[in-house]
Length: 474
Image 1 (cartoon, one colour):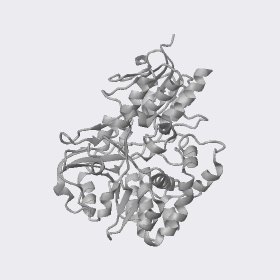
Image 2 (spheres, rainbow, N blue to C red):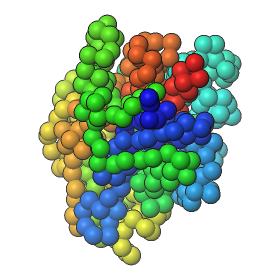
Image 3 (cartoon, helix red, strand yellow):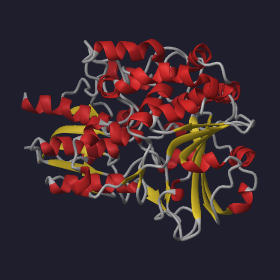
Image 4 (cartoon, rainbow, N blue to C red):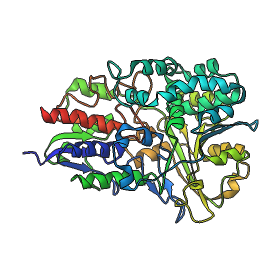
């Protein structure tokens, strides 16, 4: 007889979201986590010096506030504290101009000069429909859509390559660079279809909910998720690595917060050969090279506006960012990489000792790269913040290969759990009516290798749990 209604393998945000959804439905749930602590891609630790607390992977969380799953939880009662910097994002250029994205749509447009009205025309209707757009995009492709008009309005621009949308919509290098930087989160060349969708979603969220920082670090998000799960009767066991199905106690359903590669290993011959072949064809994308710094003061930005933002995109103009991302996709390490930079300690005094600061950054690199990109990343920071290197007390770095060693879900350093292009966005990991299911009615996938993909939103876990609940009721 089954000891549990469901066992969830992996205690990242999606695994915990799946477990919470099942526990709220009255299921007896066990979560197995290989590491000593829960968290997956949302852990925090003292990586450099004592007293300096760094986010190991995820750091900024617009989807944490926009996610329907997170919005259904009693966040305030659980002690979750979100910090909203004055601006979500700053994007500086060598000219001294800075695009500053605030929640206030009009104030953001004003920072774009001649493209002010073009930005309003593009973003205002989308921001007005943000909840409808999120409902239809944060999960499997709804057929038919819940909000067809809102989704169609979004899709007309979202389906385009980001560089094309930027050139069609904006005249100035500043506005074009802003869209390019947000689309750069896709880890795809900006001339690929649907890359505009990533930039638009991040822009929509910046105005609708902001890009908040969790007080005390990203670890606090999964810590309160774990506490909430146990309050519902769920059980979490850490230091329990699952190498095969024999390591899992009897359960009516098993949900895996892992990517296809690990699922193939763990399930061995349990799944049909045709499905295993489809999983084997799943594509992983570029990796990341990550740097964390302990600083003896704030970053000395050339433009004071950059100090207002939790996130700063460092890569220059649209052509520069596009060239860097295209090089990575082609297996090259760009001399001037596109750098995603966060400065949490400016707004959260729990991150560093008094008067000191932390900084967090990564750039994209070819899949499986072990090349050290520290000098290239610091050169990009120094480009817009002269004197930055003199502020460094200590640094911690992780190559793409080291990222995979830290978290096996980051195959080749791919933090999105697989390529998120049009071929693999809603059909990840394989094309099925419910992508969270497998041909085995007992086995489900709840990782970022299912829709809607990467990010700390819990929606992959939520949708997988809903699929499991349907099967449990049957």
